[in-house]
Amino acid sequence: MDHLKFENIRSSDEFLKKNYFSDIDTSMSRYRLQGYLAEKIKIMEDHGILAEGAYELDDENKIIKIISKKKGYNFSFTVNSDLSEVNQGSISNPFGQGGKVGLEYGVGLYKSSVHNIFYQDRFGNKIALAKTVDTPIIGEKNFKLEEKSLTYTFSVGQQLFSVSTTNSSATVTDKNTNKEHLAHTGTSIKTSISHVLRLFSNPYFYGKLNTEIALPTLSTFPFIKPQFNITKIIPFNKFDLGIRFDGSFGGIFSKSSKNMIPINDRFFNGKDYNFPGFVNSSISGQLKTPFLGNSMYYTLRGTLFKKINDQVNGIAYYNFGGSTLNLGNGYENTTLKDLKSLRSSVGFGLCVNMGKAELNISLVKPIRFQSDDHIENFSFEMNFSI
Image (cartoon, rainbow, N blue to C red; front, side, top):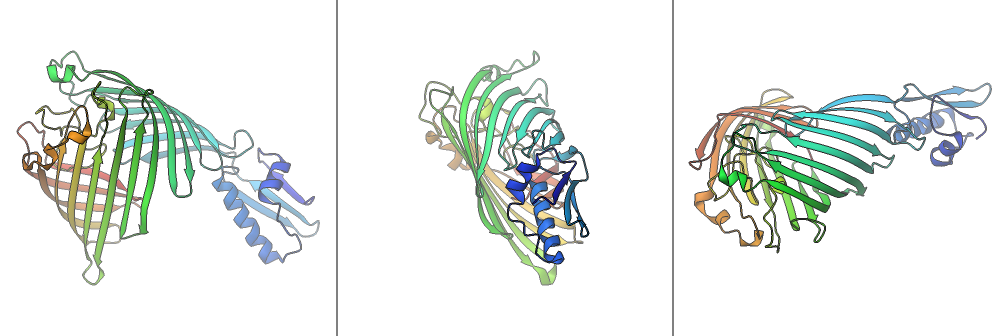
């Protein structure tokens, strides 16, 4: 181990040798040693010890040198499924134990913004202090939603857990004189536990179950909030055709009757689920007032796709679903079964494969909708693989 050297790495030699090279055997062949070092450097990169690593072998002096080729200052840009863009600046291995510390700033297509300060350790566990603001899209007709949260996220195998405390507020502009909207403004607090479980591993059949529990006493409105998504793909490779089925469900359940569900915790189309043909956040329940969100929803979609090239498919789809808004106990939902709450749309366009995401651009025609719905004829969706 005396012949193992490190260069331009913030961690101590003792830490690196103990955690990454304790099993090194310098008597192994050069070929095996090269494979061993490449594997260890990849692990160190994954753990944030190195931004980009390399090694040098000095056979004459029998010295192995592990080098960090970059100083670990990282800048990235990503696009999320809610059409927001996030810019992140971070420093890898800030305290010599791996991981990273950084800042995030995001701006959404629909006037949302997020500010986030975080620390993530080398195992992927993360603590973040965030502020999120959704500014009204239509100033006189919907809400400004603001959240301040402290969240700790950790993983156990393929499962993801998080514990958070959140302070939320909902306000309207002076132009909004809708009495129903004014009745839904206010502040709320929430301490919650969330769990994300990925279902199935088949690339043609996969899903995800996301469950949040807002704890009694520590939350304005305690609840259990599951969301479920599933996708089934049936390819016909001989004809460059395929059929895809997507389904989603979400519900908020509570035994509390003292308060109504805070609007910040409700489901919104375009944010929590996709429904082409309807303006984002505009689908509501039986109150006949848009932009109030949902306490329960379901959607089903069937898509026929035709391969154009390796990245682009032509698509045609039919989408239908229902939603409701019960302000108190979610167990009392009845209108979700009522055909009057059913909405549907058809569309055609292009699906562009972007690696871990799919971009859907389509012309859409709402077929069934409510008189107070806000409809549109163009759809832009970003869907991430699970």
